View 1 (cartoon, one colour):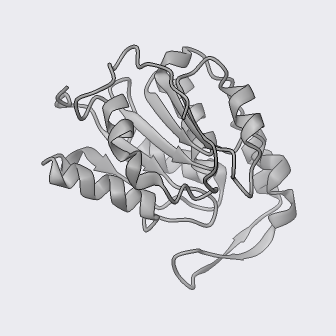
View 2 (tube, rainbow, N blue to C red):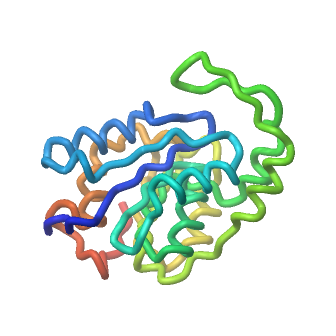
Length: 206
């Protein structure tokens, strides 16, 4: 299926990550190879959840034709955007309770892909709580979760998105080091390569 002229794929990275995430780079490279480089966006998200949401709304303004790919904390954001705009969302080991899980990580932090430092302020936990969104129209979500995730509980992910198309990996890790084998499945869900239907992609488990 060919991408429509208006459809975009927007990657939302996780906590301490960046557009240099290998998953973001794989998606960008694959779309470039398809001649769809202009359809890809991957903003550097601020540490503040409220500022991150404002940036995406201002610079990208996701709409129903778009697909968000959110990794970890980015998956939490992607759910909020999907419920607000009606876009699709692919969730890669998404954070389900980030205010709880990041409570122990306030203060000075260092980015994964650089030596840049930032401060994750305690007030950001309240901003996260304000972005809690229950998924509806579950056919517009694709959950990819790894039982081997060493940081987040895959069972919480499956419980929150129960009823959505799901790829459940028996092993794996939080970073989804096997993501190269899943790129075209993500793009098929987004309608950018042949495969799964835009409106009713099949549920599957591996």
